[in-house]
Length: 192
Image (tube, rainbow, N blue to C red; front, side, top):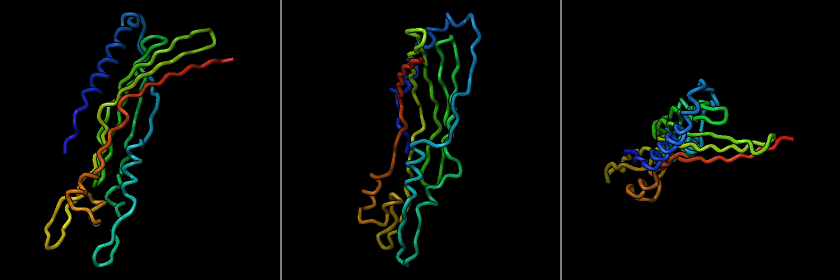
């Protein structure tokens, strides 16, 4: 199954980039500097994928099959974020996520683009605005093939294969989720 394209996120990223480039003429007189802002492993989608590994089912012979082995990734999605300062009060936010993969799910790699600006309404206050857009990084759960004996083999949701639902119905419960696509942050700081 292919991930649907997210044209809105792409257009948002393009709008953010063009807005940031409008500040470029004033920034050309100074050197741009890039700083590492954040590096971390894990995300809400990583947590959701790990949660899918809870539980299991009992085979007809009585032995237990845990979901954990299907939903355990050896690498957890790592996110790295940077800030490229183009003026003393303006900069590009950008970064990437590596994605992660296990036997029955995958989280795709992602790119983050954004813009940060601040102003000083008074000498001891700062008003900041940042907008970021994420492209990619979707969580996709993969189906299993279950053998129902005389009834044949069917593609099913691994977690629901032993339940009462029909194989086709279980497929509607496969997890397909996207990360937060657009993040707007407004902050006012007053120092005494």
